[in-house]
Structure formats: structure tokens, C-alpha cells
Image (cartoon, rainbow, N blue to C red; front, side, top):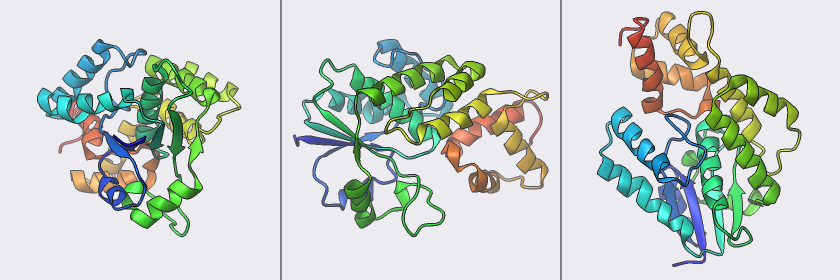
Length: 263
């Protein structure tokens, strides 16, 4: 076992990361905590049972596959690494997953070891339309590691815990008030913007749709009526949510159940 653990948010950047000269073990975080049921105590057995059931039902994933891809990976968090590097992006999907990892790490009895670092780019030099680390090569990932990596401290863990609780409670007004009242974000510089997008998702308009559902409905009503085209149109303007096609299908299915789209 190496002294360093790198936690990657999903498989998109795994191949490029393995080509870098950055030393350490790798853990791939494959959960989608931005969707589905959550509990405040992320370390509880019921939390992961509920997640497994929801993922299996909503994404047609077998429980055994969830055990292998998610649960087994979690054991690495309790290994005696000297350093843990979190590679998470700016969008809501990544930021909520990041909060989950930080909360898991905060359950460790000694926060002074391991040292926890964050690599969280919201842009890349020379790239006008940066979408995420999955589009970077090994040299570009090494550049991020050398230039934007920051060590998380106790204030960051406190902010993450507060953000997690407000997120799990799913009260748009309370979350918005907390965002308005919080002036210091430590090293979690992408968190406020992502959670602001979540507030829009929690609010429901006069037609009973949240922001994402209304956006997808408008795209459909505008004449874009196939799923691949709808995905692309959504991604053009709503990168902040970090949703893949499987997550968008959740919202499209809501619209379908309401009889608003025919896909």
C-alpha cells in the first residue's frame, strides 16, 4: 500500500490519471449522491442500504455490482494513508459527492492524519469551454496537481458538515438563508455556486415543475424531441448540475409520467 490515496470522482479521468507520474493508490468514487435518498449520518449502515436499493431500482444496477463498485471501495478510506487527495469538479454532482467523502473522512478519530487535499478546477488555462477533468490528459492533470492543490483544514470540514446537513434536509428556504449568511467558504470555492443551483432544483413553479424539469420541458417544446438531442441541449447551458444521461432520464421520466413529453 502506498502512503497516498487519490479519490477520483468517477471513471472519466481514470485512464489519464493512471498515465501520470503522480504516485499513490487510487479509489474511484462511483456514487451519485446528488440524486436519490440521503441521511445525515453517511457512515450508517442504513444510509448505504438505502443507496444500494435506490441505485439498483433507478439505474438498473444489480446489488452485487453496487457492492463491488461502491461499498468495497469505501474500505480504502479507513486504511492508514498519510495523505488523501480529492479530485472533484465544480458542478453540483461532484460537489455533493465531495461533501460525502469529506463527511466520511471526518468520522475518522484523528483528523490530523491523514492530511486531506483538494484538487477542484472550475477552469483550465487555454480551454474556453472547460467541462471537467475527464477531458484532460496526463500532463494537464499533473499541472493541476502541482498548481491548484490545497490542503483542507478544520474550517473546511465544518463548512462541509453544515452544507451536508442543509443539503440532506432539502429545504430551499433554509439552504438559501444559509448561503446568504455564509461569507467564508475556506478552500471549498465551488460549493456555493453548486448549492445555489440546487436551490433552484428544490423550488417548484406554478405548474408543479422544478427548474430542471421546466428546462427539459422547454427544450422538448422547442422541437428537440429525441433523448440524445435533449441531453446535448441541456448540457450546453446547465453544466453546473454535472448530470449525465442517466440522471437526466430521472427528470424526463417525471415529465413523461405527467404526460408532458412522449419519448
